[in-house]
Length: 209
Image (tube, rainbow, N blue to C red; front, side):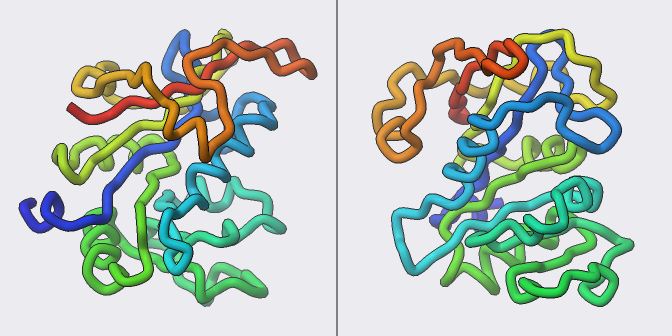
């Protein structure tokens, strides 16, 4: 584990969650329509301080398949898929295969990213689904860095949830987000409303203790 903590690449989670029940998905899709959240997600996962580097986004097979095909792979990011069933030949993607890596386990992916790909990776972001988030949360402080959380204030039905229930216990919510606001151009810890469906939500950042 010291190898993880002592190197510069850090792991964070980006997740939108129903505040009432920790729900994050329904029938393999996002259960709400929040355009600002999609922009927020894109900004976090693409922004790098070093213009010569990119970020890696780690996802499970179902999360990969939930991305509309014309948006796959997510551009300007290294797309890392955890699956024992997929290989590049079975993806059926017409382009972008050079931006896709497939591993059979989360640990194998992390080890490869911080060793074989460390010269081109700045940060790693876990983007779903629930098992990917759960495995990411098991990594130690010093490597596991942040949770970028979009808290959705609704009772929207979900069938996939953040686990464990107390996943935020070892994190501290950031009140001073001026540095993040600068590059994300986002108001944090402020309830906003999506006009198309009157859903209330807030962007929050939690840092590992």
